[in-house]
Amino acid sequence: MISYSLIILFTILLINYFLFLQDVLKGLNNLKPCEEKVNDEFVSVIVPFRNESENILASLKSLSGQNYPKNKFEIIFVNDSSVDDSLQKLNLNNNHENVRVLSVPDDYNNNSNKKRAIQYGIENSNGEIIVTTDADCFHSKNWLITLMKCMNEKTGFVSGPVEFIDGSNLFSKFQKLEFAGLVLTGAGLIGANKPAICNAANIAYRKKLFNDVGGFNDKIKLSSGDDELLLQKIWKESDHDIKFCWNHNAIVKTSPNKTLKEFYHQRKRWASKGIFYGSKKLVLKLILIYLFYVGLIIQLALSVFISKIYIILFIISISLKFIMEFKVLKRGEKLISIKRIIKFFPIVEILQIPYIIFAGFSGLFGNFNWKERKIKR
Image (cartoon, rainbow, N blue to C red):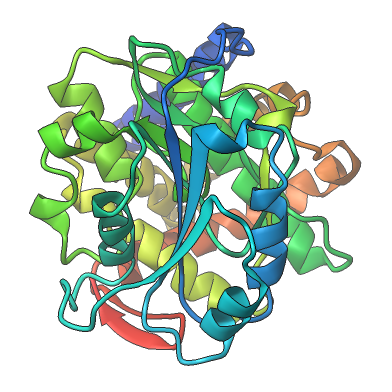
């Protein structure tokens, strides 16, 4: 028996997702490289780290080698209770006058994980502008100066592009394409003046605004959200502009997850913060998008056991999803180097459906493994 109420529901979910991707595409078309003159405000680059022995010296090299006046920025590495030798390596190899290494006291917000390291760094910073990145990231020499070209006196928050380093196996290619889609979605929403997502590996904001909106205080115990929740608060509670730095020189690169387990825990952690977004309208939109993905699986099942009409609806839904998301990635080819691997797009699209359903559901329960820590949401 055909349920017309289900067909209407699936159609509403499809329209919602289509309009969402339309916003993303329109926003991407609005984005242009920033051409502002870099001002004289002092910049503090905060790098929280925990157990980064493998990457810490490369991070020090790429950040200290920035093509930016040394007297106009500082780099603050903040050790968050590392149990490997990353702190020792950093201290032994740091001979730069504008690089400081701090360790978060054990009793300082000891249940807040990464946020406590960033907040401690901000409290000990000298900059009027805060830039955050991660210790497993790599930057071009013109990264900071390019990012700062977006930061004029009217700008409160800048989101920059993050890209996964090319890998040789299919799993790394899947992650690179899927992650590029997330980054471009965040960029498009900013371009559409509906900022929602960004990545803490490449963001900049005014310290005064951070303090004015209460920083992380209202969500300090949440394991994630040191980027998106702050972005949304600054957009909602201030009259400053939110920008995306659409420039290849602003890209921050990082390695994809090595194992499926690492990937699962990362995405589960990211998914866990969605229900804490300040905008109820945004939360509702995300729930409807999640239900769209769930609906694709239900449509397939119903086409087998109930009626073939559901397979028609499935084909329409999946086709529109493929077309719109492919357009997003093609637009992003000018920024993120995905041209060589875009041929894997159909495989990624299929694998993405069960992963989003599973990660979104499990993220509600909020237990994760991160940097050799077992943490709760």
